[in-house]
Image 1 (cartoon, helix red, strand yellow):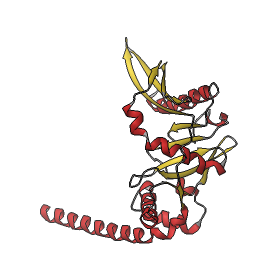
Image 2 (image 1 turned 30 degrees about the vertical axis):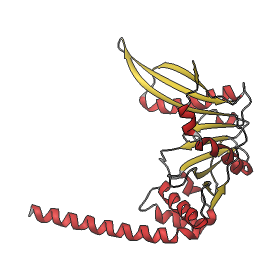
Image 3 (image 1 turned 90 degrees about the vertical axis):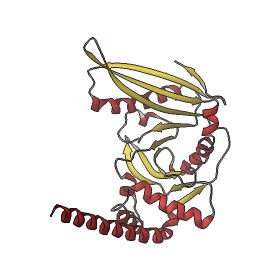
Image 4 (image 1 turned 180 degrees about the horizontal axis):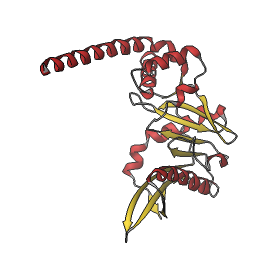
Length: 263
């Protein structure tokens, strides 16, 4: 009897996988109907002054006290050379749940501080903009890449009913980045494109009085697109991506020539 249960379970799994495959093929075949929601962005290799920020955190125990340590690293390129600045904060009485939120706020806080001290064209943050403090104080464009999409915020912002219905159907069997990957790769195959691609930006929320635009960006062919939030003039989104795309393309060069580190 136990073997019968296993056999029945395997047959059910096989049936579900076959159904998922058929639905995925149907979605893929229809992806070409939504290429109008993909925007191709040619690279602009004009020198771009930027600050890119990321952070990490951990908890240590010292003499019985629990101390949270947050490290914020800022990569600054305002003069054609990369400089890394590390800022450390040791905090007491912070729960594990609060650490991530505080680290994100510190990223924005330090980026704001340095953007006021040096001429900067763009600030790059890691993680979404919505829910952070300090970001509403910037007067220059902010681009935030969220590699781990915890909420399908982009699909919730889509205003075109036909496109939104397609995405909602796809989300029943796959994650949001994969849906956009399918549409973008269809676009590349039909248009022989190797430039950066973005999906049509939509308003996904607000920070203070500022609207936040969400979209997916695929800097390199065949890679999984990244959910991105932008705050600034909406007409500048394409221009901002055009200036960031060459930086992503040259990432290997940055890694092979380690920048100067300052603490």
